[in-house]
Length: 270
Image (cartoon, rainbow, N blue to C red):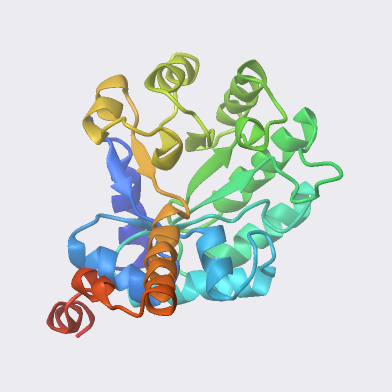
């Protein structure tokens, strides 16, 4: 599909009655696997990608981020949305400039968050956070395809804001034109429902912070998109750590029983 066709399809996914699960590949190989399994769209993970470089989350440059996005878009025929963190900028005009570059990679969606990536002042103040989202909206509306912009209120995840402030920010992001809203670290279905009662735009929920809640349950309360964040990358790393420790500590290889078959991988990558 052309970028415009992927963009239209991605937009339509958010308009359906049921929620869809969007997995978060951390490299080209994992993107190909998720596509082969039958997922409808992909989203990058900032932490998962950073780990492939041996770094912590937030330690990737803007250029590296954009090249990673370009690689995933070229490797898959699915729509790809990106975790663009704070768009590698504080000022609204610089946010707009970065998103213009992001749109040239093949992405059909991406997120902007109100976390600064600076522990000395972790969150943008309310007015600046809203101005940044507005600048992002204005930038992506200039594209010749629909770029689905997700606005993230990070206060619960970063433990800097209470639920009321998170909702206030989500409502403001909605008012300036964000397509999708996202408050990472909702932990119960009641919290999800509470947020949904105060916003109109589609809501993305991070599944790993809401354990025990099924896709169907989220669909039933009105969630439109369910992402996984860096959890799938950690599953892969966890299996590798367990295998390494078994070999070193026990001298055995039972971990091989859970390895993907070579034949199946050939089918996925050919």
